[in-house]
Amino acid sequence: MSLKQISVFLENKPGTLKQMTGVLAAENIDMRALSLAETSEFGIARIIVDDAFAAISVLKEADFVASLTSVLAVEIPDEAGGLDKLLQFFADEKINIEYMYAFLGGKVEKHAYMIFRVEDTARAEAVLTARGLTILTQEDIAEI
Image (cartoon, rainbow, N blue to C red; front, side, top):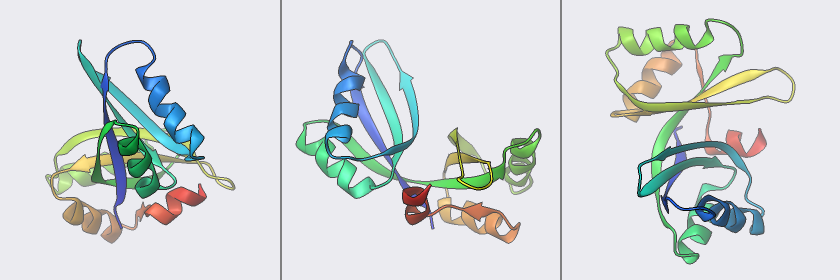
């Protein structure tokens, strides 16, 4: 049930991020979440989109260096302490979080969604679903 995150390596200069978003916009690919990490010479944009396979294809056609990574998207209540409760499950099971970022959504109820990269995605998913948490699929992302 994990979903695909796209990591795009970007030269750290003005306009490069805009070029990437322009490629996605031209193909009507909708971003749901974005994280940008940088060094002095390059950045890594990590994005969750409604159609990961279309996005990776058009980015590579446009000469971007991009790859797909499995990540977990976990729904949590958009309330004080929601993330803390979720992180306790990871701590209890000694699951290390390599990185994470968030986005808000939900058409009826407001939820926060946390994107997690962990070493063993399948194990983390099993732990969280056993605790009653909702893990989003690629299809869910397309509908948010």
